[in-house]
Length: 226
Image 1: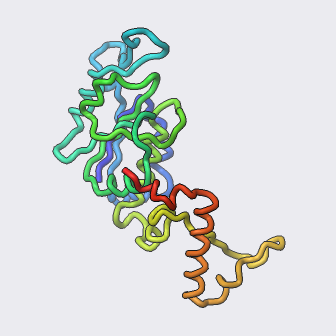
Image 2: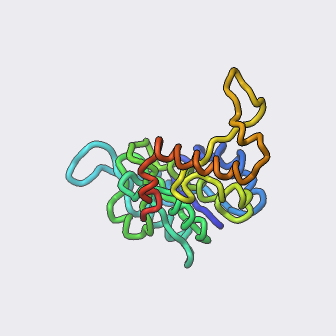
Image 3: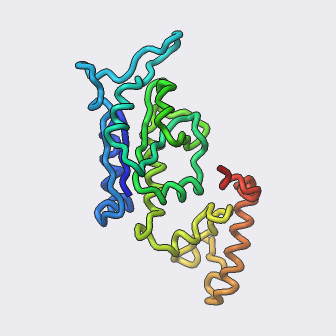
C-alpha cells in the first residue's frame, strides 16, 4: 500500500512514522508513507494556500488551486482520496478494513476554517474521527493510518486481529498477567485452570458484559454501519 498525506504541517508526522508498528510496517515495505506540504503546490510567491471566505466570517479557508494541483500530481488510476473533515462520516472499524484493501490512499488534512467547498469534487470520501473539533486534520489522519496500516497483511499477526474489539460488535475481553494476586486483586481462577473451553466461554461472557455496560450501541450493530 502507498499512502500520501497532504498537510500544512509535515513535521507533525516525524515521530509517528518512526515508532512502533508503523515504523516496522514501513521498514518491511508493507506500506510506503510520504508526507507532502500543500504549500509546495501553490503558485503564489508568498506560499499562500488560504484566503478569506466570500460572504464574510471568521478565519481563513484553504483555496482550491494548491490542493487540486497536489492531488492531480499524486493521483493514480487506483487512488482513493480521503478528506479529513468534521463533516465527514464517522471513521469506524469497517471503514478501516475497507481502506486496508486499497492500493493507494491520499489523505487530505485541512486546517483553519476548512476547505473551499469545490475541493470536494475531487474527493472520494470524507471522514471524521468523532464529534469534536481539532485544530487540523493531521491527528485524525494519523488515527486513520494507524488503524488501517495494522490491518495490512503481515503487519501484525492474524490471531491478534481476530480477537480485537469491534470485529463482531463486541469489546475485547479483560486481560491479566503476573502476579496472580496484586494488592488483593486476583486473576480469575478460570484463566489459571488451563481448561481452554471454559476460558473461551468466560472471555465471551466478559465481552458481552463489558459491551452492555460501556457500549450498548455496538450490540445494535451501529459500529459497522456505513
